[in-house]
Length: 116
Length: 368
Image (cartoon, rainbow over all chains, first blue to last red):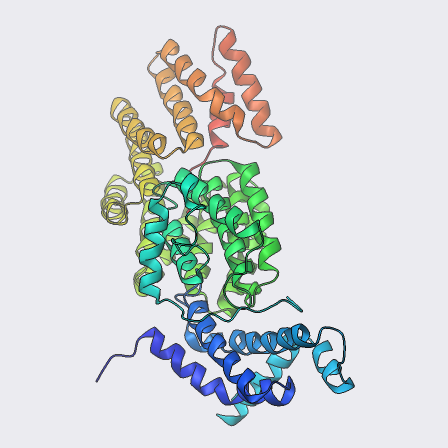
């Protein structure tokens, strides 16, 4: 059997988190399907590089879940702020974007734990 | 980060390609590098990741070069504002290159520069996704600087908090590395038994993790401690083992420290001429990599030994050789007072031995 590399572990964690990331980007941050898929590709590339940053190369991959979900929330928020600026935001999206990504990411971790 | 335009890379390069490109970029002289930034892929995060890894690994081999290179990349990323990678990557690389530059300056005893770089690093790490972990690594460097500035009480209070942070973040190697600071402070506070215990625990932990750098650090400190206690067999055993690892890692700071430790052992055993020879070897090692503070400290140690041998003129020459470097290094007021006393005494007839010893206490061995 092939030995699992760290990159494989990063892939696995990303795949496990992907449904939560996808629904957060689409339902919460209201990105369109193609926008969300593009975001997920970016997050995949980012997360692989993130796991190889100085200081993190020895850290267990499982403990990087919060960082991944936080990155997804920051991505969704930054994207919508860039797309809409401060103009034309409906009240619901405005409320979502006013919320701290860190707080939402912590809720998503609880959701992931509940699903596993 | 709010409202920032995100960049969507078309085809990311692989990590192996990134490391190879980083080596190519570092081989180009800095003056030419910026002009060739496009062909050298200097804005590619994989390349920057490779650069940071290479520079970090070289900190104790060529610290002057690392300081220069880290500064180059910091300036390159900072101005003009470039769009680097995805999400927090620009901020991370700015914080990381500043942290590396600061660490190199600390190794070189350029303490004011180190502090300035650490402040820059802190400012950029404020915007990273994993800022808690990034700040914890920065806190380690700041604490190491405080050890070098002999703020021992503060370090003893803060190390357990830092260890706890690293453990919560599951950064076990960094947690263990922080214990080195505690061990060094215990040595300075003349608590060798507790210090031995700390370094033995670090040695065992490093072995279990397979971390050679940390293992050699523990062995080096054990060698120095045993040497100072006159325990020759244990000191030489630890020295031999550490030297093998340092040479394999091409860590010249480590090699220098081992020579220094052997000098201490020979000195305790009364083999003054051999001790001076060992100190000279350490000095050569440090001089070649620009560690002027450690070179100066060793001049003072040798001066002290020469006084034992009744060679006052030679001792005076050692002190005079040390003074310019000492002058450049920012010291605490007590160190400045000892320096003033010593300088005054070498102008007169006799060298102030107490001031000499007090002063070389302010130049303790640098920390990894």
